[in-house]
Image (cartoon, helix red, strand yellow):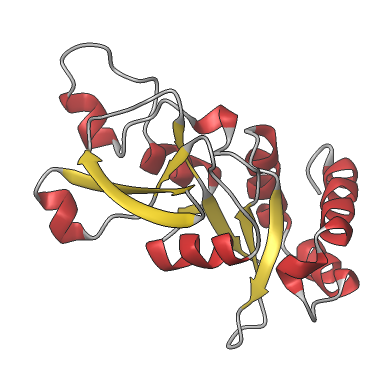
Length: 180
């Protein structure tokens, strides 16, 4: 296991116990056993945690039995904000380039951006992004036209918006997910 693995597992177990609504019918010993068999997943979860994502189990894959973790921080993870959508968009900026892109950071962390459906599912488990917004996986046809999608929750509703892929804002980051 990676350094700090025991500390991470304690954090995940505590969060799991505090938010049972997110994973009804799933038992922590089953999640722990799966995590212990997949040490690379712990590395990704550590990166999610280190960037402010507060990962938690939000479901189980019925085909593989794998557990699905997602960023459950109240707001878009602080360590992943001020990013444009992808590396191509970042490289195309002539001035004021952000340090990184959502897609590149997710790949480096070993996680994936949430799809719109996953984001909407997450919002059924709590209220997230009341002050921030999060890039989501954008369909290729939208990306080819220079756009990217992001979501947030305002006025008790989940909204999906579009922006140019080169855009970035201090209050926009991204949420990721990982199947273990």
